[in-house]
Amino acid sequence: MKPAPFRYHRARSTEDATRLLAELGADAKVIAGGQSLVAMMNYRLARPAHLVDIGGLRALDHLHRDADGGLHIGALTTHHTVETAPPGVLEPGFGVLRRAMRWIGHLPIRTRGTVGGSLAHADATAEWCLLAVALGAELVAEGPHGRRRIRAEDFFFGYYTTALDPGELLVEAVFPRPAPHAALTEFAERHGDFAIVAAAIDLDAEDGSVRGGRVALGGVAPATVRVPEAEAVLAGGGTFAECAAAAADASDPPGDANGSPEYRRHLIRTLVRRACEEAMSP
Amino acid sequence: MTDLQLMTLDVNGEEHEVVAESRRTLVDVLRHDLRLTGTHVGCEHGICGACTVLVDDRPVRACLMFAAQAEGTRIRTVESLSQGTGECELSDLQRAFSEHHGLQCGFCTPGFLMLAEGFLAERPDASKEEIREVVAANLCRCTGYQTIVEAIDDCAAARRRAGKEN
Ligand SMILES: Cc1cc2nc3c(=O)[nH]c(=O)nc-3n(C[C@H](O)[C@H](O)[C@H](O)COP(=O)(O)OP(=O)(O)OC[C@H]3O[C@@H](n4cnc5c(N)ncnc54)[C@H](O)[C@@H]3O)c2cc1C
Ligand code: FES
Ligand code: FES
Image 1 (cartoon, protein in one colour):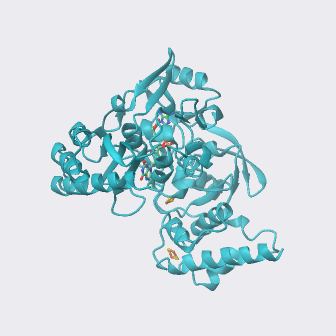
Image 2 (cartoon, helix red, strand yellow):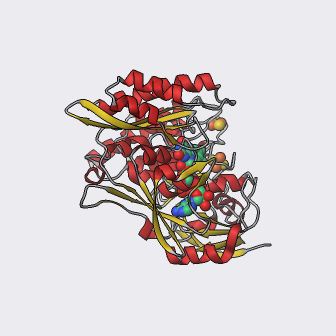
Image 3 (cartoon, chains in turn orange, purple):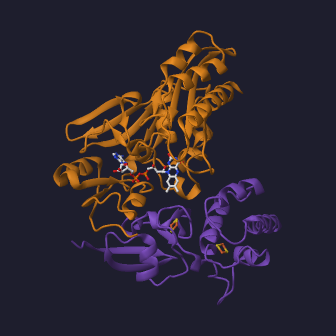
């Protein structure tokens, strides 16, 4: 279908964007890469009266390491930019991000879709949501009253809802610690589809022995979640299989056309173990 | 409420001024306002890839982009492929599709051509496996993909050979 009419506004700076959002009120929406929003508008699942286009804000398109080894990703950085980043920027420590990109849709989606758009859209199985939760990212929001940092695990509330205020812009995702032993894996019916279940693991390991780690799951609850029960197994010296079993036991996944709760629990068990093994493979 | 926009679009190296509603997607402006009907429309939600064009050399879905967002970029459509090699002469990629029977009804072909054109420009050394993964982005109901993969692989190999000779 064709989208409903709206007024188009091109933001010239982040301040300009937040000012426009405040002025236009609840009927306004930000558009970044449009890979989720335009599809929803074509379906008329979304009919904003105003679109504030932030696509031209080059200041939000960046990818760099800080002095402490942390990684800063501007909200407008595309999946494709991360996938093709020069090795020095991601490796060592963040190769997991590059490897995870191949799970996001297909090339022509990744050339337009942005990191900030994925996080703000907050599909529970979106790869960026899983990576942000597993790697302990902090998300930087900018509104009329300045900037604030929100921990990823406090950011995702439920079905497509986040801690962002309507007038706020997501400007950056900060991954504070390198994650040399991290992996993301998932299962979808066709490669490129949103996953039925997705798992991301960030292991704390030295000299081949695991001391603990963070476990994030998508497709098992309305939002991307951390699984403390599975993390406790890792911290207690349990095996990957035990960790995976704990993750499945702790989850109460929904049943729908894509899979029953039992099927999803089976996927959790398989995918968590697989992600742990991949995280430890050199 | 109609919100008309005056837009300047750079399509296939030519500047076009278009007055259209802001809700017009890039693919609709290309087809209805500029009459470049080589780019096709299937699903309008990013799944089929029939609308694939190049924006700043990268393959994108023209149904998931408002034309207003494309101002200031360089857009290339399937019509650009045969240019420069004389009237109505097909490009090497198009000839490869024809030789390998990479099309039957042809509905999906403009999308596959632009997907491959953008991908090979970025990855001229792509392996057959990588080509196979990339073409999974678009849907073809006729060919079964094998001939499309072979066409793109053959075209890439020929371009590499030509590159070495020069
Ligand atoms: C065929 C297809 C397959 C896909 N497969 C996957 C997949 O497997 N995994 C996956 O993760 N995604 C997938 N996507 C979605 C894609 O990753 C999108 O890029 C992403 O979800 C949204 O990013 P965007 O820049 O396109 O955002 P937009 O579509 O422009 O915006 C999405 C939402 O976020 C808001 N928003 C955007 N940027 C900001 C910001 N900086 N601050 C505040 N709010 C903002 C918008 O208002 C809107 O509500 C797929 C899309 C398609 C069409
Ligand atoms: S028409 Fe654009 S992807 Fe189908
Ligand atoms: S040739 Fe008919 S859909 Fe591809």
